Image 1 (cartoon, rainbow, N blue to C red):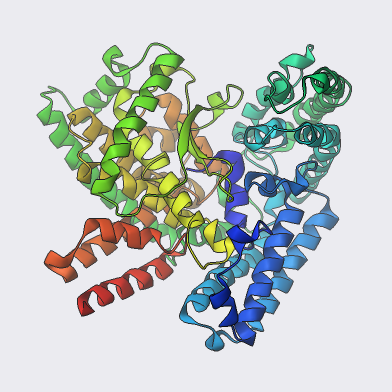
Image 2 (cartoon, one colour):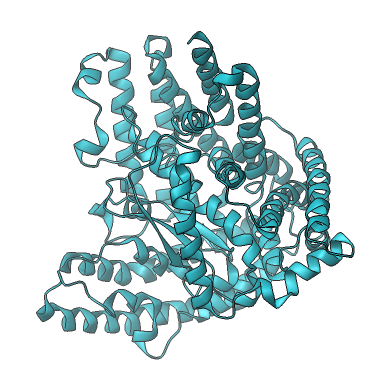
Amino acid sequence: MLRPFLLAAAIAACVSAPLLPATVHAQPTAAKSARNAASTELYRLFDDEWERSMRENPEEASYRGDKRYNDRWTDMTMAAIQSRMDGDRKALERLRAIDRKALSASDQLNYDVMAWDLEKSVERQKYREYLRPVSQRGGIQNAEGIAEVLPFATVKDYRDWLARMQALPVAIEQTQALMREGVAAGNTPPRVLMERVVGQIQAQIVDDPTKSPFYKPFSKFADTVPVAERAALQGEAKQVIADKIVPAYRQFATFFSNDYLPRTRTSIAAVGLPDGKAYYDFVAGYFTTTDLTADQIHRIGLKEVARIRADMEKIKAEVGFKGTLAEFFQHLRTDPKFFYQSPQELFTAYEAISKRIDPQLVKAFKTIPRLPYGVRPIPDNIAPDTTTAYYQPGAVDGTRAGFYYVNLYKPEVRPKWEMMALSLHEAVPGHHFQFARGMELPDVPMFRRVGYFVAYGEGWGLYAERLGYDMGLYDDPYDRMGQLAYDMWRAVRLVVDTGMHSKGWSRDKAIEFFMDNSPKTRQDVVNEIDRYISWPGQALAYKIGQLKISELREKASKQLGDRFDLREFNDAVLETGSVPLKTLEAHIDAWIAGKQRG
């Protein structure tokens, strides 16, 4: 999955794209000269919308490597939110005014992708999700997380960060205003999740400014920052933290605990929100990019759970375990041989697995992306409340690599057998390939290069876990059990997400169903269930996307026979960039037809 506080921005990036160096953004001169009036207007819209996205979403610009807005936060006043929503509607009107039939086939694809996303953006406005600006997985309470993608190579980089720090109290006030409006509208998160946030806010209230997460960039300077400037920068940072940031968080903590938390809802289901049933139907369709109903998705999940359980029984027999599958799960969760003893040992093992995967990639791909990736630990202040790992894309101009973040909190609950499948999903050939290949696509507008449709992106990540068999990486039966555990994890999601949000399941029932069908530890299971509660529908996309890609692979193999090349198929899936599943299917059908024609 994507980094938690980047996901929403990444999804929104499908709408528009940045004014970055011409070498990154522009199409070749020949392509420009071939444009007619319709395509000229289309690309003008692409440029305008990308520029608007960067201007209105400074954090998104920072993640994309656009430094122009590094001194500010997104304006979260109601007037600014309304302006952004109006901008989406106007962009959709501009797009619809363009004659699609006059466009080339490639530009019709660009048109269709933007149309899908703008239509969904406008449709979701009525659900007022912005009234729930804080979750246990991210929000203003850990705003400092963005510093990890900032360059901090010049004095101006530090001045920009100081300006953001100075502006934080205003951002907190704006967040509180939205939360108050959410209470008035009955649009609040579940209390069981918000109870986790109390500790996250408290972590920002420090007596020593150097212990603040916001101070971290000042603890070590790059050689490019003049020595004569460093003490002054550190002094200003300490003063801002002591005089502005800590008092603002202290006031926020009081508001949160006394005013907000008692007024959050006791229900966990999306149907408990205003117009909740329609909202859940919408997000299920949005994240899966399909027309599947909650009942259909629930049935698909139950079928997949049964299939994977049967495969798990085979692994249990292969390793000679005498006992039930539930007892085998408990063995996998508790036997000390499956765990590292320290965070450093765990991190070293993750790095070693990544190095083991890299040389095997040529067995499954002809095209290897140029952008490198690295492995980093998830920051300590968010690790207890977040998932096992996530991926952070690189900068679009190539100045920052992609990073695979791994959770080192409580290594005694992070089993060795899950590490191969997890690395294949989050790093290579999973999210890193998907994002890096997208950024390197030629002759497409920027919003397509950085776009993120969850069913495509996470479906690819889950499909990538199974590519470990094609690359000869699952020689250990326990690693194969890990792959099945991760496949089961995503199948269970279909059942418990729809169960909680549309079928009246309790949180405890969802946790127990997960535990009954997966060897994942209870720590992970509880965090996962709480994630599904806080983010209705998102978790449905993984398995639905994987099933579609696997179905297309089977179709291509059957129709092409001896002419089927797995490496070419995988390249073909990635060469569209992130798109809705129906668009991917049309592309692969055309690719198969082209191969059949020779």
